[in-house]
Length: 359
Ligand SMILES: *Cc1c(COP(=O)(O)O)cnc(C)c1O
Image (cartoon, rainbow, N blue to C red; front, side):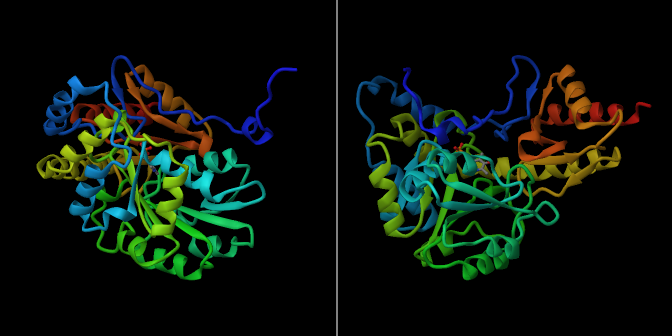
């Protein structure tokens, strides 16, 4: 008989990344349209003569740099090969068959995948207005609940939960349930009532915050993320991670990226302007745009007829614009479009305008 993987492994539907394009614009993975800091290029190039050496397994200089930048205790930071790896490590350390995780209806798909890898069940709680529903999530807690995952802001909806609501969610959870606050898009949010969860992760034994270098820092290719939280959780992640889980170039790039405030400020400003412009222009075509605080938009198309999301996606693709269908999230009538360079956004506006003006 041939070797057989575990039954829960065969139940996993593999994550399908955003399509890429050889020509035209890729607006399917929420990458930084401005690229990345020139300081990163310099730092990475400076290390190319040393690829024969293993990375610093503890990512010590990187953790110190993160700690300094955000005012944190470096011993309570752990780095991962993308924040995706942190979620996997959490599943490895905290989830077994029979356990449950809770997430919101349109919450990020990766949480479900990592739960499945450990044979745990995902309890999905209906959203309200495309936003996580705190009362619903609290009502879903059982003895089996081990982790509550909240992407804030959430992908693919672009919506966020105000700080008070996150606090209320935490206050209602039993102490043995870990609340994971995934703040991948935190830097883009301008709202006064938003917080990444940094303070909560510093104050409670059951809150972990995760961050990434893939979005505002534009380093998705290098795979770098980190988590901050209680020592016991950080210790558990350290026990299950690979000894060299973050490669040297990623560590060096992360340190350099955090030195370039001019680049991140410019990225935030650019996103703010272009997100507002896209939201207004796409709404003016008659399409519904879910209000986003991140670097992408979720657009709702009519369920039937010639203006469907599927037809729009095909039309955009013919015009060299690769966007994200979100059927895997149970959103067959929506498309997610990342904010691109100015010319890409101009094209989105004109192609969708023509698409909606057809009869
Ligand atoms: C993009 C994204 C991440 C980042 O993942 P990495 O593995 O760090 O690239 C995390 N959470 C959400 C919700 C995202 O959209």
